[in-house]
Image 1: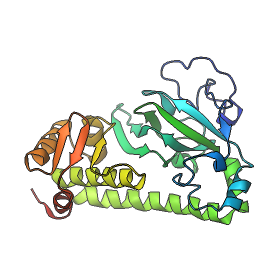
Image 2 (image 1 turned 90 degrees about the vertical axis):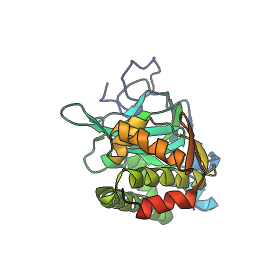
Image 3 (image 1 turned 135 degrees about the vertical axis):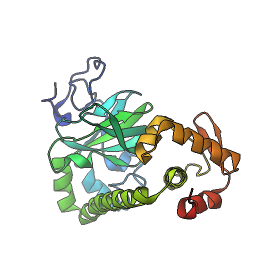
Image 4 (image 1 turned 180 degrees about the vertical axis):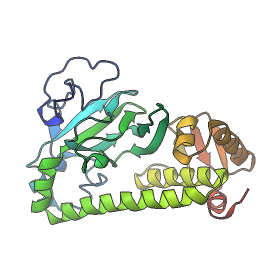
Length: 265
């Protein structure tokens, strides 16, 4: 039932197909509550990055609840009540909206250390869907408690404001770029962005699995599936990347950067 919030969910029956974690009574949150100081991702997690030992001790006053989201399950759906921000502990999520004719528009992808749910702060409801692309774990941070904590820890408040500001700027820059880019430039920008985000989390920037489908990529960068597939093939033929199903190797990063910045087809 959608009326139950994450902070009050304590029942553990099997989630029904199509249920979201937020909208279902079955989110197993009370089993895994812990503080920030005990988290091995505290140096990477967006809200907690940069906090001092003393600030972590204060942050531990608020229990952040961990839950598991299986591949193909929804963390939340459009219309679910907004009660928490979610830090991705592991895994990969796709955020998307459905148009009136049920066409799927991918809005972004989230990986370890990144936040989900910020779009719900203003309206008090989630206005898009968050779907797990692989088995994932998230840390649910009750927003009311997080606000109170931020008043006690100015550094945390600044970090949250920075995170929201960066998200706004990033979305703005992407809209401006995508509005003037051709298909080659758009895919090059997407691959370099994913690469940089993997590198920031200590993973290889040159070899990685793309958890999303090419159709998802096309929706995100505003290109048809056939165009995305052709562009992947062209990049491979030109020695910029190698592709084996969803496994990508970046062979010529400067070449990809040149495509993103100057190529015109």
